Length: 147
Image 1: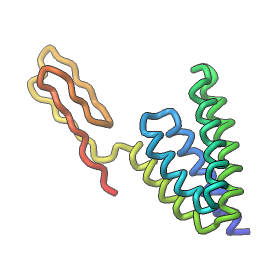
Image 2 (image 1 turned 180 degrees about the vertical axis):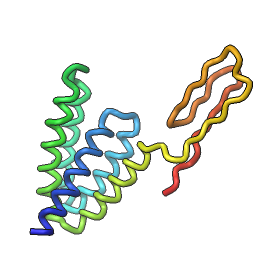
Image 3 (image 1 turned 180 degrees about the horizontal axis):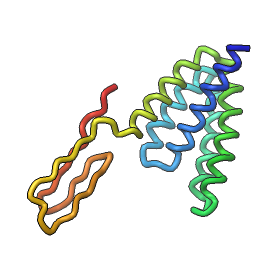
């Protein structure tokens, strides 16, 4: 029973992280990692699993802003089931999914970002979790994430 609970926990956290990433510009790299995970079940199985993920992402992207929260909830539920079934067949993939989830969540936290502002008379300050490069000589590079 403890193993099933661990799989469900990993699947739940993984599903939440994937749904969060689906609407971001970084999705392609996350999708690549998900594809590697699913290849543990063979190439044909990986294609089927990825098709489900791609269809779910398209539903999220196509959803109206007012419906986005409920669509995300539905997708999380669907992905928990999909990931849990996959992990039951391939329990050795649980650590890989956990590592992917940790990496994705670590990126979102923006840990280590610092901003210093000097001589900002009549100006605005923008704080960003990523790099900013604006014309006129303003450049901000976010510190590298510790991994």
